[in-house]
Image 1 (cartoon, chains in turn red, cyan):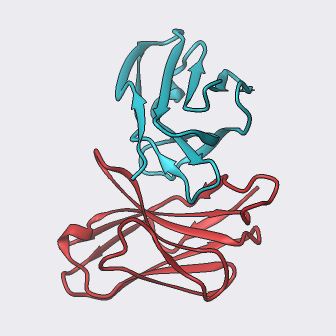
Image 2: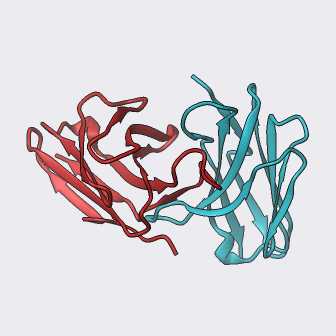
Length: 116
Length: 111
């Protein structure tokens, strides 16, 4: 089974703090994704990565950055947290495009971040 | 950007009833996925569909890839209380980019 873990289930931070959310997967998947989930808005893609040290902007990258130094780890960074970044953050992984099942994504349990 | 219309947004059903939900798109998709999300957890993949007309089951769940490639359906037979949650469809436009997600169908079961 694919195992995707996220560093925290719940996190409370103050406005202006730098926040790190970490995601680790154990299935050797090339692709990793960060989404945020908000009521009424569904899942929105923040950033994704198809390879180590490679990153691509998703639909809502503003206010976020990412780091992928190792294949199994993908970090989401909030440089200066703001209250509108209070949300559920979900990490996902998937196989390389063109593989047998190139688009299935497997999610971690989520981190519920509150910015005060 | 691309959008998926998922309906209904929410539904209340009696235990034992069958449930149907669907997703539609204005674009042709080459993949449809159905996920379930329990409160406070991440989405879990239920069924993946890759061919138009494909019908796939996972226990009491059955999903179909619409013949037009623009829609997909999920049916749950004989619902039970643990079916409660939010069901998401997701799809990939043929030869393009990342997954697009529907906004979910919230299922509540009356005991």
